[in-house]
Image 1 (cartoon, rainbow over the protein chains, first blue to last red):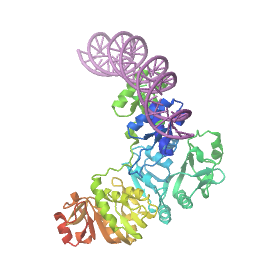
Image 2 (image 1 turned 135 degrees about the vertical axis):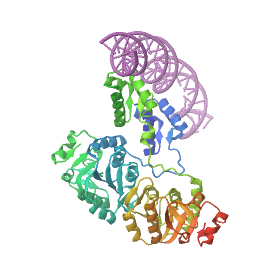
Image 3 (image 1 turned 180 degrees about the vertical axis):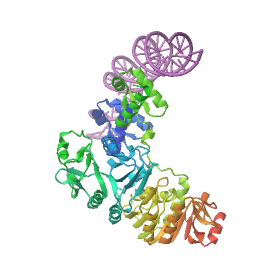
Image 4 (image 1 turned 30 degrees about the vertical axis):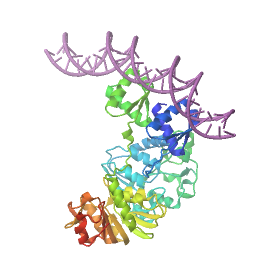
Length: 249
Length: 249
DNA sequence: AAAAAAATTGCAATTATTTGCAGTAAATAA
DNA sequence: TTATTTACTGCAAATAATTGCAATTTTTTT
């Protein structure tokens, strides 16, 4: 692990846990406490954290930026996103759901891709605003504030009028029997509408979502064209999905 | 393998793995570490990666945050926003246009304000997602990517069905004769619709927008209920606006 | 085609950076 | 206060980077 990586690791851990402990970091990273301290000092000099006795805490951000979205397992999500790139082609009409996996994917899209993208996620729309050749349509409605996506009748109405080539759909939980399920009722409804509006349905998620279940069913497994995880597509865990007729990337 | 190929290989590997290691690259490519280092130095010079002890990591800008919105004259805009707070009351239905003045204002809203807010600006919607007691409705449509706002028929249609108590409207340019004018045609149309949908129209802008003009007329000055600038409301420059029947804060 | 010039590459010597350790100092807890 | 934990400093070993140089390959010129 490079030093630069290590420092990123520390900063990421800090954002997630709101504190880091010198000794614990030394153990986790397999290095001496001295080295960790030197890292913490350097990061402190750069103003990236606040060093305290025993470890470090986040630097007090007087006006915290709501635009900074914390992405867990970013590396895995990037792997997934890279696999998904093969599904993109110029001229497609695409629907993208919310979620951080899709957000990471959005950052990986080739800068010159020509496509029409519908989304109902604020962060994803902001990300896609970057792309010169993408026609971007935001699907309006009532905001679900924690997830930063729109939900409700307005969204359904717009989706009912679209015919897209492909949709990229995040997931709360997936398993072979119940299929794709969601935590929130309203989100599950929106995703059902997405399905109906798309020729091809791609679901991307990290492997930890596999074989779990949440209350609201979106669709059965065989309704998905492709699933993409961070696992090797030949992994045993994925066999039953493949057997159900889903393309596994 | 050509040198150019090799460098592409390094960059590709970097994108995939978010780091490259000098020694490992030397092994994989069957070259000496020296050569790899020279490559990394060249790529670093070109700004394509960040060279670090032991290898390289992606250049920070690569991971640039599209969510960081640069706000000019933030202090002045904050002054304006503070004045505007007096116009907010629980229970209001509000329409907010885009623009950084409105964005700054959004950050100043009392955390417990109960209101319904319509907006068609992505950054403002993200900011307002913070507020527990605000019902937030995003007006969807085609995104104007540079301004991060939606425009077009869909927006007009939604606005035509709203009746709001107050709207907060940014401005490209203002002068007494032509009134409020905009750079973009489509934005001017949307703002016209906003006017129609609101009982009260408040326009906030820094004083440098005063007595300037841009191509597309939104409305005459007397159509505005209130204007708010960073100047003292008794400033001479504002007299003629006051004379036109506008409340000046 | 041959000669000259330029670029690439690997090696060795030198220089720089990182890291862990030991001893000491400082901060916290009892 | 004393005991304990955590932090800092200088030093040496290990690791990595740079530089000059020579052999080789590639490109350009004649």
